[in-house]
Length: 360
Image 1 (cartoon, rainbow, N blue to C red):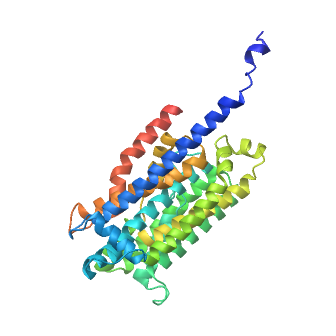
Image 2: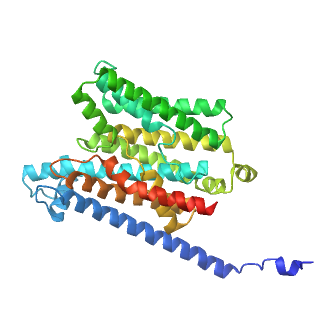
Image 3: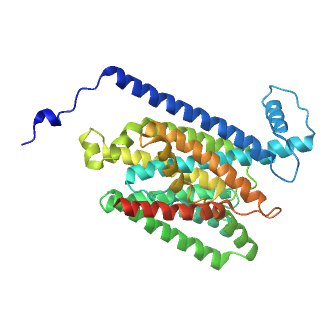
């Protein structure tokens, strides 16, 4: 027989426990501070890269002048390049990267699927259909813009996924299967509309946008997406302990007092709305929500109170540099951002799939 004295765990001394918590908090604070500084430096340097010669000092000068904390010492042309062209694009890239990475983190935890990402629910396909209906068929008579049409399409797709999954029982695997079905449906609708009603120019423009494009964005897109990201991140952080409980499965989470159905609905709706807002402004950018959560977990562990902010910073820095590469590598021609993320994300996807197979 096994002695109970051997199996009983010794009581943890409060002093080492407190030191452990302090080290964890200190490590998280250091990681957070380093991430913020790296993001600020990445944005400043990325804005300087391009045909026009601009220094980091010019960037800070332009930003300070527009914020009212300094005097403008740049020519109107250089100031316009920084403030009206490169800065909103770079900031939107950061916001999109952060938002997609957060969505991937939440969905992988909720669905307990390491291969889940923001597009598994068919939100991207729905946004694509909405955009095509506006551009090609002129739905809305000019009153509905492409971002608005994409947003409405994304919401319609998510509503269909929720309806299908609820009808089929509402389990996590049913949500994934419903998302795959909705994705195929809206992709077919998009292809049908493009093939039957679009001319060559419309087809080229729509396909470029569907692959992900941050060209032509303005400050309105930045403010809207930033506001949606801030609200969504606060909601997800408010459910951080609940997401930790989901790591043990739905039954274990329910035993810990979690309202599984309500929590899953709130968080899935939050991620769907955030994805819809990002896709409506930047198009379909894949693999960010799949790859970055795994990279962040390697730094922070699985606790979502630390994982979510670090994932957001990692996604922001990642997409800033991906967008910089996309707009400069074949200058003056621009490569869709989604193409670059796919070239980077597919090998990472294979690695994650291989690690998942080994774990099972």
